[in-house]
Length: 181
Image (cartoon, rainbow, N blue to C red):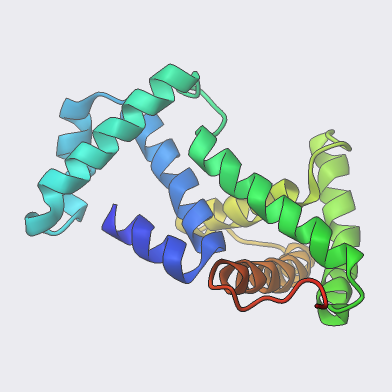
């Protein structure tokens, strides 16, 4: 919970990827708190374990209630994705953010290609980017190679999402001026 809170404050993109990883780890434990205690809790500082256990238990309860025990994401994570998508649309529509538009259009061919490979041409672009980032994270964790073409695509997507995450952070702090007064 502490790590998630800090990531949410510092980088919404890293937060979302972390939460997806937590969802997958809880699925691997079948949301069985005995397994969670044995497999996941030792990774947390001793002083934080009780609080982390409570948080993981609550996430398991939410996963059961929301029907995402096999796949999908918790509503709290979907809400973050919706916020990012809404901000993305506002930034794209505004002439005030040419560098954002450039980063988006640089990543767009890769996004289109990823959606085509996944067979889901209607998938939201921001979600497609996060799916790609999460897939790359999983490959790295498994020490699997990433092709040069994939590395190029991921670099464009990372730059784009990093910029979106920074604008999100600025908006939450009241520093982002989306419209002229």
